[in-house]
Image (tube, rainbow, N blue to C red; front, side):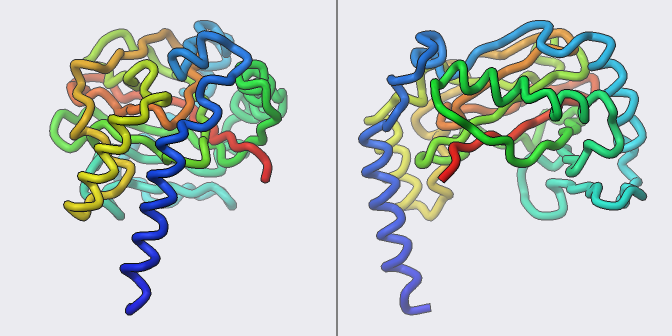
Length: 249
């Protein structure tokens, strides 16, 4: 317990240094990815495959269901472990229950695409399907997944996301390259005891772009971007594949 404060201070100092450097954010192979921190690729997954995957996941949208009934497949509700995003569920280890998702994972298309964008070898970590029920009250505010090391995600919509009412993934373009704003956010979070990944004090939804798309649309993003699910999600259950991508150590 005595070491908690010093350890926290060291970690905070490391976050400050790495944020100040904004390492690698300007050196990606893709100029668009370097500038904006994300790309949207319509039709990345065939519409019929997206529809088939949505059908495979549909049974898991039943809120009363707590167990998958499939070995190795887990249901994780955010409401069980946090106070925000209370209408979000992840189905982890989804490959055994969806041939369409299994085929996408085996194809290496996600790794190849992010490697083309960044110019770096990246590996696929977790692969989940996220279920977002309508929610206009508990959405998490703008945040980053980490300041350093950079992590990446691929999102593939399995249901139509055509407007704010569908709760689109939303980002502040170019914020992965910001230095001063992130430093101010970290300092404020440290003083007030908030998670250092919260950045809503320096960015607002007015800065964010809603990323819309039909089923099969993919979004590849540097997760140092300020991002959030749009908080006016009032209709339709959004389903999407989420792939976590990392640089090998």
